[in-house]
Amino acid sequence: MVNDNGKIVSQTQLELGVYNRGFLYGDGVFETMKVVNGKILFWEDHYFRLMAAMRILRMEIPMNFTPEYLEEEIKKTIEAGNLIDQAASLRLTVYRKGAGRYLPETNEVGYYAFAKAVSSPFYTLSTEPYEVELYKDHYLNADLLSTLKTTNKLIHVTGSIFAQENNFDNCLLVNNNKNIAEALQGNLFLVKGNHIKTPPLEDGCLRGIIRKQLLSILTLMKEYTFEESSISPFELQKADELFITNTIIGIQPVTKYRKKEFTTNVASELLKKLNVKARLG
Image 1 (tube, rainbow, N blue to C red):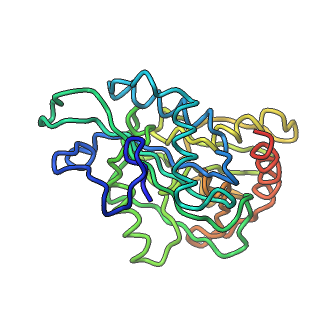
Image 2 (image 1 turned 90 degrees about the vertical axis):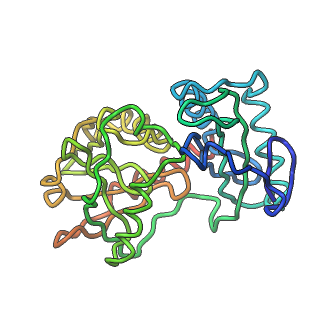
């Protein structure tokens, strides 16, 4: 079932129209959230990231787009899919209405949301091999638009195809300054000794929700030093650990990059603290 601007319909009844700007021009933004037993994990962060993205894209934010209204619409979507008593992944997409060409006829918005079940209500650490490679067919721009979750994700799509064709589990995206910006499905963290770093937003990485949570956690862990700093491809093989973060998986350890194999000790430690924040938040 799909929530189409507040109305629950089947997938076949969803009518976005041939002039939908999200399809024609990638003129939309979205949030993917984990919902456990009806509770949206880190909802406040998702809400404010969505509002910020809409403002940056000069979309007109409806007066009723309050945290309470959208939270209720998300829960309504979960209930319609019979997912209220389990863990689910929910995607909320907001698109600019109307026709027009590059110049829109209006800045008003519409939205739709759908959900599907996920395996675990908690974040768990995978012990399976997970190999990554650089994706350099196309570069991510180191700019503000790259930090937003827009419906234009062609680099991530082509990178995912490249990973599948070459038997990699994920790829790391390089920006136009030749630094590592992020992974296909999340933010990247690098561990060397007791020092941890992640690319800054200025490098074009997504303004990730779990990234934000880990930044908060790391400020309280005096056993580690931490910085938001550019990561060059040459640093990858010198690292002790690499891990990827996103809202659905939490933390995904990388076990191999080319000939280098990595440990997962820090990722395991951080995952425990992340689960505590998810439960309390």
